[in-house]
Length: 399
Image 1 (cartoon, rainbow, N blue to C red):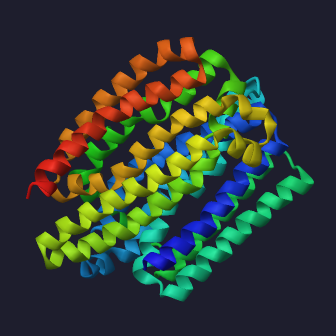
Image 2 (spheres, one colour):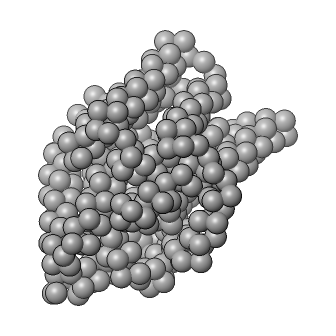
């Protein structure tokens, strides 16, 4: 399962990376900044969705997963389609009554990114549990190749930015449809009942915590656009692009590791603890190694990936490595929160971190622009990270 997951992630990361490179080179800073804002918004929503739904599903044992399996596609659609409709309506409103600036391009960035990134975790949870190994890999390869062809068409034919985002949305929706049909269709009534149960158990505090985390995860980029303009946002997002494939690899490996943890822990609590410890230090070593490489060749990597336009943001790139290490190693730590059901205390730590991040970001951005946005984000991330580390040490390492 790990090998298939790794190959899956390499292919998807390559496609995702290609999209970013093409958009940087084809579109204006305002349009790329709109895509970057849409991406950060989609990742924020996907984070809440992942914590409230994807992770609890991945931690189910095989018997309970198969009982719930046919509700999963409908559950996903019940979240995705209303959000897409809101983004489309907002884009149309800006088209007719707005200035068609950064807010306009952000609306279409959300349309393109939301369907793509909201489906990553849940599609993998289903495919890793339900598809056979070769079917799982072929399905992933076909989708990633389609995304690459879409990116190539954008590079050579240079369509309007809005059309490019609609193409991304269409591909992602088609993949979601195929996953749903593969597991037996969309059972809306069953999905509604399961959602009501999830709302009573995990959704409330997890959503509260993830929304609070916007203060240090997404708000720094939005505040940067407000105080420093589209060029600063474009540079801020462009130099994070080389880290994006690494983040996708970590996120999807985490899906597999949580499934393996659920199976291991159900057999033996001691084996489950050992699995968690190994996973945390594996992710730490992986992220520190790549962070060291990036720190030493930051300017060269920016030139190779995005060109000369954003080389001036190399110091931002170096600072972003710290945030990357924190985010990467939070994934196995959050498994402890779910196992012990410490949703409320973790949500409060995210709320405090969000407030601290917001308070720190404003003066830092005014003083250091994009570098200040990264520093403010790191300050906010440290609050829930310290909580997770303390919980991990007390409940896993000591026992």
